[in-house]
Image (cartoon, rainbow, N blue to C red):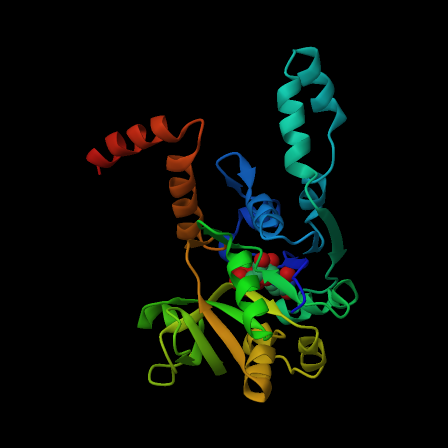
Length: 292
Ligand code: UTP
């Protein structure tokens, strides 16, 4: 089976749940301690063996592109102060893999954003990392998905078991466990934001999928769905009904950076684990919690 070398990160959305700040700061650039969310996603893709990463941006999102560029003023200032090691670290952080950018000219939904990746993808399998979904895991989630893709040769959706209440906001899977595995499923359909009683299972897609180029033919004929947007889940549901997909309940702690609580929680989590400030921050947090 062909190894997965490409990843796509749609990051062009309006981020209305994070207003007012998202008008000026793309949510994908929100800091998780000292690095923007997008940096964690790019690193996840590259640590998973993907060598080419396409970030789909849009108007007001230039900061994303700037982050992956050199900044000679900082390099000079740091070098003048004898802080060459920091320059090296920054260059190392922003120079991993081949990073490409394209713009989604109209914000017509995740499915529409993905269509902008068609020529980049060509005939290859590719991972999709939803730009506001962050996962901390032992093995990078894209690697977990790529391993399963290589095993079955079918598109893979990253799943988590969620509560009935959470399921209303996500996409419920029609899924059957694959015999002899602990966390792999055959997926034959899915339903977006199911009304009570309409859900298939408590398994929902959360932030990572691994697709093949056939999805573009389906997307091309996918009518606008929820919110008048072209929904990727509508196209994946059609794919699952026609050909079947594989579901993987992945290992890792996931945060929705597109929501206020998810963003705050991700910073608490990453803050306590940060090599430089983690220990001190945990102490501060414990002290702070006493007064709550
Ligand atoms: P979301 O639905 O969470 O993003 O899409 P949104 O539309 O920005 O969020 P709200 O609901 O208004 O707060 C998941 C990912 O898909 C990207 C987003 O940037 C996000 O990373 N996306 C969404 C696009 O690239 N283009 C779109 O038209 C919509």
